[in-house]
Length: 95
Image (cartoon, rainbow, N blue to C red; front, side, top):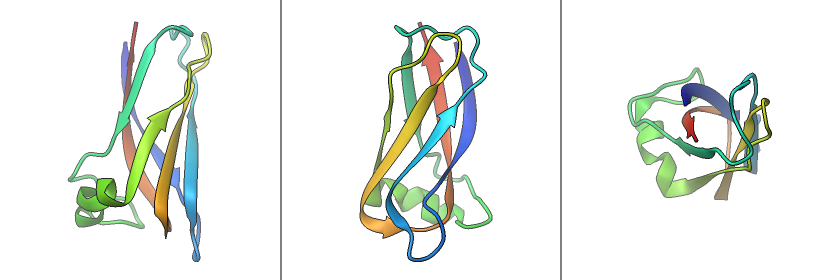
C-alpha cells in the first residue's frame, strides 16, 4: 500500500475539459492493485485556493487507470466545463 499527492493540470487559459497525471515509481504495485484518487477540501496550489478545491467535485470527476506492474497508474479528470491550472490530487493504492 502507498499514498501520495499529485498535481493534475488543466493548462493555461482557455483550459481544458480533461487532464491526467501519471503516478510512477510504485515498484510494489501490481496490475491487480486497487487505486483511488480524491480531492482534499483544504488543499491549495499556486493556481487554486482551498475554496476552489472544496468545489472541485461539483465540476469534475476523477478516475484511475489500471495499474502497471512495478510502475504506477494514471489519474484522469474530466469536466463538463473547461478548467484551468493545477489542482492537488490525493491517491492511494492497495492489493
